[in-house]
Length: 165
Image (cartoon, rainbow, N blue to C red):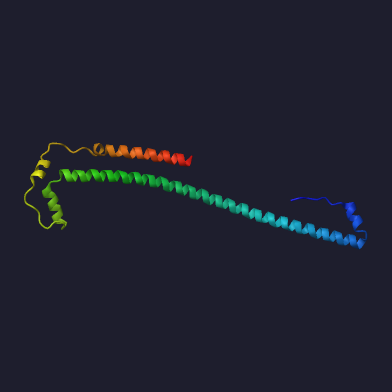
């Protein structure tokens, strides 16, 4: 935007008569009125756009906070899921190793998954049941899984750190 000063003497000399001078001043006044109206309109639009931008910034901040909360919830759910998968794996191993075949067959018969239960246990099942070993605790059984998960979590954290910068 550029402002040009009015050459008053040149203006009067170009518009010698009173009627001519009055017409030129009226035209000049109308021109500056249009400029003032456009400036007022632009200021009004600018105010609306600034308010709109502020509103969008607030919505963006709220959405970012919600995203962070959801990511934190997702991490905790993922950890809980991993813990439950490990516990499930441990419990299945215990069932396969230490559940008496007769009890297993009785459970299957009650759930109609097995039509007829055998009356005798196999030699392999008997030898497996007569071991004197005590089952490992859950923590001992999943220690290796936890170490692997910890390494994975460290790698993921490092990658996220590199991405976030």
